Image (cartoon, rainbow, N blue to C red):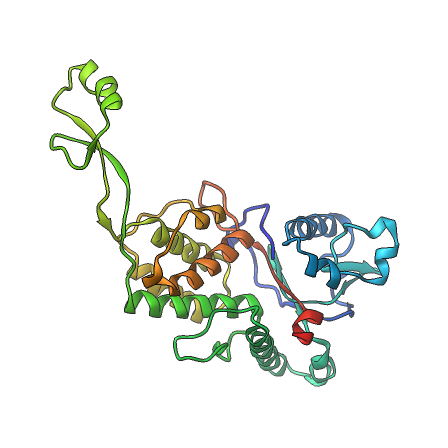
Amino acid sequence: MGKTTRTAHPSECPHVMPIDLFEYSSCRDGDDILVGKQRWSELDAFLQEIWDDRPQTEANFQWEREPEDENEDDKGQQRYLKTENGHLKAHRFVGTVCFEDTTINIWPRVFKEQFADAKSDKAKADLRAVMTRNMLHWASRAEYLTLHSSSGSSAAPPDKISNCFDAYIWLFADFARDLLARQPYWQYQSQIEEGEVLRGRLFMNQYINDCLARGRWHRLVYEHEPFDFDNLLNRIIKRTCKLAQGFCDSPTVKEKLGEILFELDEVEDVFCPARDCDRVHLNRMHTEYQIVLDACRTILAQCQADNSGRDMKRFCFLLPMDRLFEE
């Protein structure tokens, strides 16, 4: 999992066929696109930032022990992608990396021979969809994935979705859309306002400084808590959906995200970083929203945007295949 470092609007990025890698395998088609020159340095720096920000637990350290740990120069280096003889080489992580106009899919090696036998682009696209569904199914069985579709399946994205990140966004959108329809989230929101009629608690110091001292004695500054649909959680969900729309390639996913944005039309569109998710406190009646909130935190952390609201085209969605297999 990771976060982004540079902005780019989707219209600025031409469509490029994805680079397909398999665990511990190299890609012959990657040298002219990303390997060498400045692009690999930028990609490596981006992946290194993701590696440094990964959760640090004792279990992770046990799983991360590899032969290269004996080399002092390799300690602390990202192990998602490397270069070898002028080619990109994957390690044990599977998933999707988007680097501006290039999408890199890393697949489980059990599908490698089957993918090599697929000659046409359509056959490869169909196989990508099959591999995506399998990976999400494994992730849900290993409890890496708490999202599920509204139909009840643990991981059932449409056949046309052919990379892990789009599939994850689809599961998020499908689950959130169904939850918003069944149980809209309203919350008492603490607000400080100014008006002629007192509502709630008077802010005496601010009233004296801002109103009374300026001859505006009839204007009161007060704090109250209206029961509002335009609350922090719904703002986070709306921001997540708008951000995801900018980098998703699948029209099916974009349509599902659009349905959520329509439901949240009354909610203010504001910039929400991933840390805002920690400010939301849910009660026992809204436990399902915790799943949506965790997904928002994951997406916002991987696809940060600046205050200008421009969409990002760098994100990373990777799972350790060895842990996935064992669990």
